Image (cartoon, rainbow, N blue to C red):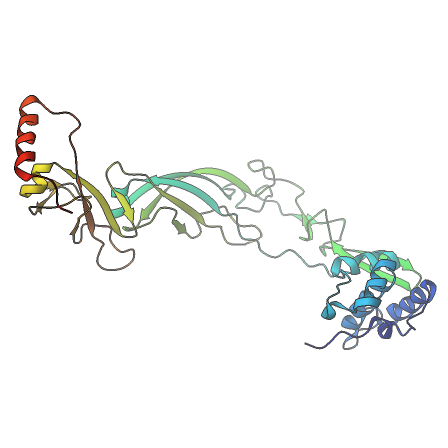
Length: 351
């Protein structure tokens, strides 16, 4: 990236130049390189460079900082940008020169829809019918905004060009300011006889029922896109999209971790010590699980392919069953007697 030229060199002045000399140098160069006066190669960049130099050197504080630290490449920024250039341009030329064009086709707005589903639905996939409100092209005028049988007329403000030209006089001569016509918004046409159905807007609001398929394995916070199901576009532009923000509800038994399902299985002391076979709930129904004798709290058993299907892929996760040996908080007289006998028989626990 080329280094910036010294601002004093850009304006062709000495470092001790007065405010009047700085202003005079700027006027001379700005007139010489202004885009409306000079369309040669590099004129626009030169004009920007001149404005940048003047924006810094005409401000006492910025000039002092510049004299001490140099330009932005040496750690100083004069704060120049297009906004700064615009203010200088306005001060000397009475407005910015712009080239206005007819507005291009505009894409319609997107629609966001929140959908809550269960963990079972997230695992298996689900199809839902959604009722959404969206704008569409008017059925009477087909989106033109004009009463059927009529056509828009030429805009009297811009004479059908979509642009408004204003000639301004400055110390450098006459300059033409071109802007988008506010009356017709750059269209060049205005509706003289509006459609009675949409009142000239060209659009109506409808309530539509749309089917959406939620794929198996979708995660909480995911977004499903339905292209072209949003609001209608303008000036021939395409419709927006419908985005479905999916929320998966919390489950009373299971916790999802990636594509695995976590489940805490409570068993009693006898089942843990002797071993047992229990029914374990899964997202697809109960399955049998053998608990070996001597199982301890915290041990985990894996049920393969009982988790969440991999989204847009083959296979699925597992269900991880974590053993939790439950200590009874109340005992019958007989249970207490049996535990006391068992305690004497087992003795103190070994470390």
